[in-house]
Length: 261
Picture 1 (cartoon, helix red, strand yellow):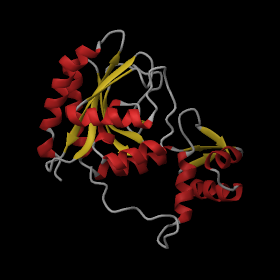
Picture 2 (spheres, rainbow, N blue to C red):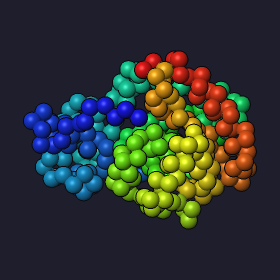
Picture 3 (tube, rainbow, N blue to C red):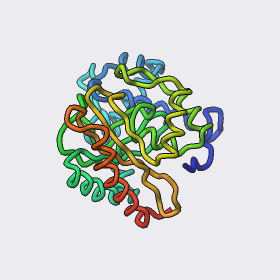
């Protein structure tokens, strides 16, 4: 996958520290952390309380944060930041019909994501039922190292880049089946590159299986991954490979012409 120009670092004169700190404050809010005190945000971001206070008050003035005087929470206006991405890229609009077609034919949930550092970010989803303990939606994030779509996207990177991402990842064992060793993961990625798909069996959550394929643009570059997820008690690995995989591959291939490089 083409990484593009190297990003600047914090020492670069063009780096705006205040903006970076403000975004860190926004990212402190998440599922289970809907309302936070100033002290909570300071602890989670490792930023000085004075810096956090200025950021929160600025975000409040701009309408992105509300407070009762003690607890802070994000407002619906924050959605405009995410919508700006969805509105500015054709990928979500192109992917959604394909995901719905896969979901209709397999009767399982189908999702698409991109890679953001050590995590995958959901950019489109067609869900038939809730199969995970945590609900997933566009914008949800999961670790890349133990997910089928994450491994597809890591396999699209150079081995050196994939190793660096894995080394920097918090590779905690989510289940007894989770592979966390970097060398073992690199071997898995090599197999994914060769096979052109990835099956993950209960590594993220017990009872959850998923199979994923790469989504390529018109130039053949991997720009996303799409998967089918199912309950392990209902759907065997052989069923995913025999039934879901061909459907995923057909739909992924049909997207190439629409995803212009």
